[in-house]
Image (cartoon, rainbow, N blue to C red):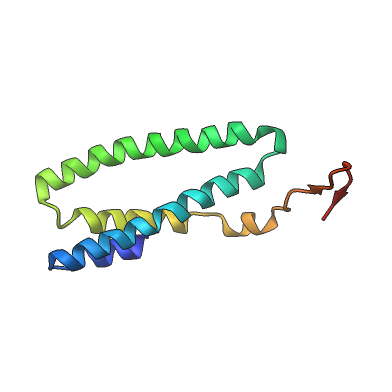
Length: 119
């Protein structure tokens, strides 16, 4: 998503720019789904609703100041710097993900209809 946003900023024709923005948007749903799946995997089964609520809260808390900051950047500098800023921010945040921690997480146990647990 970050790389696509940086590349889209370099496009100068409206049709390509629109297609590029659609590509950036195409990556949004997998990013959100990944966040929800990570939360579901890392919390006990009884805390799933709370984990989803924290994902929603985090998304809203991040989107609000980001929208305000984007508006300020666009007002002061035009649209040109806004997409590269989005891309660089997305790449920086993605690089902060603790990949080794995620690999160590055990998948949740699966239960049969009669209550037995299996892997």
